[in-house]
Image 1 (tube, rainbow, N blue to C red):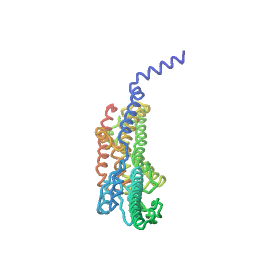
Image 2 (image 1 turned 45 degrees about the vertical axis):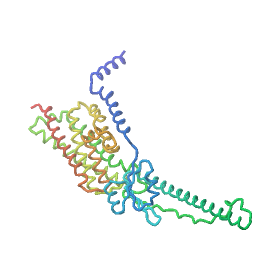
Image 3 (image 1 turned 180 degrees about the vertical axis):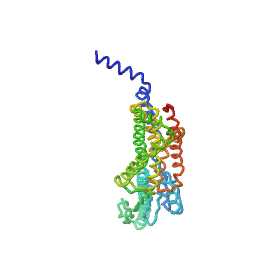
Image 4 (image 1 turned 135 degrees about the vertical axis):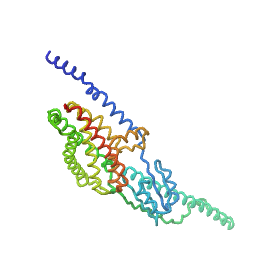
Length: 389
């Protein structure tokens, strides 16, 4: 009976908490639906290649490979310029029986596809040459047999029964073409993890700072510390700025540690300036800090604060660039533009993978700054509900 009474009590409290019920039943549906939208998109790997002075048959074979498109260039320098601008995925240059291949290598799947396509194209060319040489040999053999037959008839000799058995002239074995690879980012061992690492850095910084800041301010509120502080003449803006600066210092240290581990322990190559990586990460941490403070003013307990993770944090990983948004419906791209991790992931990709300068990710940094300003303003307004005087 006592157990039954406890069960009834717990269930009654649970079903009265509409927010908890929504998290239990609706949040999994939302996350599963987002995963379906993300992973049901066109995930085929497509490689755009520039070819310079490549034999016609190899070009033809490359163009036949699924998900590979080629564009001919007359100048190797111009093709490499397009590669650096991220407009193509690789450059193939042929000279003296050697194929010089430059890979962007920011996506290991595209690098692998390019290697397979080139090998298949060269093999196809060799087979075509062998077929052509065999056809020519057969034609010469038929011509030779006819000539022998004519000579034999003139001299009253018996026509050879099997002209095909005549000894064939030895053909020189074609020298195998050599492939020389060059990687603009990483090396031959660079894998898929390198592609998503910049996004994961932004995600984990956001996640942990969000949790720490949200829980900290919530604890201040539930223990009465915040109420006592609000009872003083201290302005709400001063309280928010104080918390932002204090926890911001911790967030900065955390960001530097995560980046240090990523670069020196995990051996992730940074093509650009490491200082830009640190600055972008700090902006991400400040956005997470302000976000955590804002949601802590809404939550009534630590449990409710944890409930925001499936709604606020988890969906952002899907829109951060791990799966290209341009391969999805337009509305998905628009939704990604209102989430801070979309801008953080793109900015870090520009620095870490492509090694570009400030002008390429200035818009993303501006978007993160706007998020910080708006969230801080909302935090100041949000504290008004807790001020008694």
